[in-house]
Image (cartoon, rainbow, N blue to C red; front, side, top):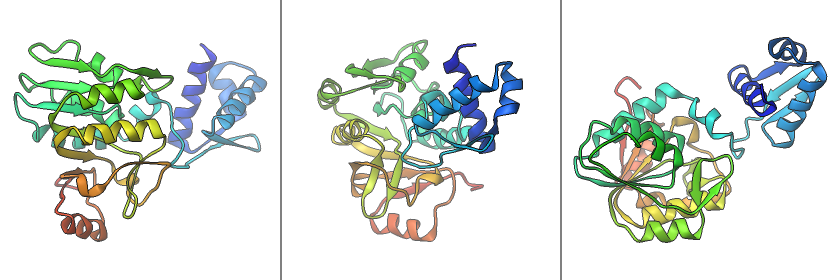
Length: 256
């Protein structure tokens, strides 16, 4: 097993259990405890974990970006439910933007029964997911691939986005704050989503309940520009009142 694969598995275990023990990991992966300590050192330097006596605990700082494959496996049931709601808003023949979030990958899967869609995306994962769909027009924004994100960003990406106008813009975000609005962990993510929102008619923000009342580094858009918010649980009364005041439709699973 490659060191990177082992560290990703350790990170998955941290996400699930919140802490890991060096001796247990050593036995699990059949490597020395010193090797595990080096893995934990690496995760700590990347800001993903905090070493403790005999092991490590997860760094739950919302501003930290986890690897794409780890984020994709988080809250799968919630993402599937949100994806179904988002897909219900898309009609056959629509032109849509999908961002490079893990949530958008689930939305792409949920859209596969639609016909004649045009999908514009900066996500390599979505391009792969839709590679077997016939009768659609799949457009890659191109740009500079960002290491670890399976996505394109940069000035060429934004220039490509601005050359289209879509019926629906479907994006997610890192955080949502009453005052600051839609927020992202890195400037490149924020500017890409701003470009998408400026190039579409109906803006749909899809985010799980953990993103509410959080802040992140880069402002990705004004909540007033959003038409629909989709989430996995019923938001607080404060947020529902805020959406109503802004004339934003809020959708969530019936059982939530």
